[in-house]
Length: 42
Image 1 (cartoon, rainbow, N blue to C red):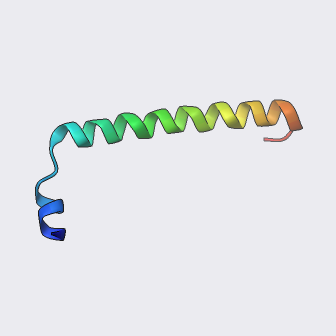
Image 2 (spheres, rainbow, N blue to C red):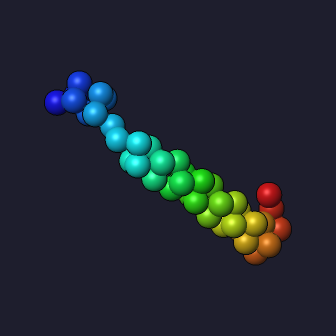
């Protein structure tokens, strides 16, 4: 099954994972900014 997972990854899944990662980065950046605004630390 491990080989099947590695070889049969569709492009939409890769695209969605990339978009999800970018969204997570933006969300973490927003949390970090609000965190620094609340606590005065970077």
